[in-house]
Length: 418
Ligand code: EPZ
Image (cartoon, rainbow, N blue to C red; front, side, top):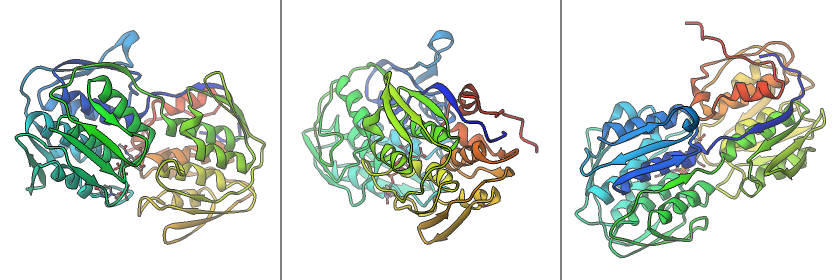
């Protein structure tokens, strides 16, 4: 890619990865055929469909005009197991644990293991399932969960966990009696999962708040549902407009899901307006530095930290960025240094001094959001930037380079050299 072009025009946001993954797993809760539309075409979604097929479900993305649609059919018994080979490539595969033990009385799911951005244990997922009466054993790197019938109970999470909340929700909907979950994650993706479960016939209340109450039901029905837009992809595209000094309408971006990000972009000097069912970002060539502290929703999302850091590398002043969710989420910093950024790390805080210009160079992606941050920096850098290991990007962005090219960016995908 070559930087320096101010982006202009309109771009569409795809369906949300972090809503699609738990929602695809929720199809395990009902017999019959479930249809999900607006499902982003991502490597992680393909892996979840593979996990479901490995168990004996029919799970596939349709083609042609319906290429954004996935259908999952479950007829009677399946093999309730998620193998290491798949779980190691995508830790969110652990989201089948709750629905499997609730629906089939047993599950064998590989432990996810560590990840580039942190240790990411699943102790809270297991704590929640135990509170509903599941018998849990860890053997040969697998979680073995069993329960003739889950029973409603009290679940109090020690830490706020998004997929932990989702996994326990998907178990509690078929448990006997009432479950009260406290200190829950309040992310829009948790709310969206509750919307789908209630459409299937569940009784979930309070999703989006820190207390969720669920009345268990006997059985659930398959549904047809369109998945909400991806707020992190929307935020990334708003930053693309900002870092290039452009003017872009991000269609389908929902302001109510991006308050903290919008506040920071406005504080930096962007004009953000709701327009045509989306958000427009108009940005001057030079922006002010702002401080960022990542917290759980509705605070500033950790999944936007790397992208905002890229913006701060060319903003006026000094920005202090504190990452409070994951212990190792500054892997993009040494690569931004290669582009000429001035960043100092002290523990889980990064101090970013804005520089006049970045200069293009070959850089390497280390995780999903780090790859987005390098592409954003490349949009601004003088000369050519080459981002390698973009398989990280494809896990969470649907053809991002094509969308940016549609806004005028000089960017193309080339085959990676061996
Ligand atoms: C979800 O991961 C997202 N992934 C992540 O997005 C996102 O960064 C994260 O939530 C935080 O918003 C999906 O939804 C598929 P957590 P999750 O459990 O659920 C600790 C992206 O870029 N913890 O909320 O795995 C954990 O170590 C990805 O799209 C425990 O200690 O995150 C972390 O420090 C990356 N024990 C904190 O809680 C547990 O049992 C929050 O993690 C669970 C979590």
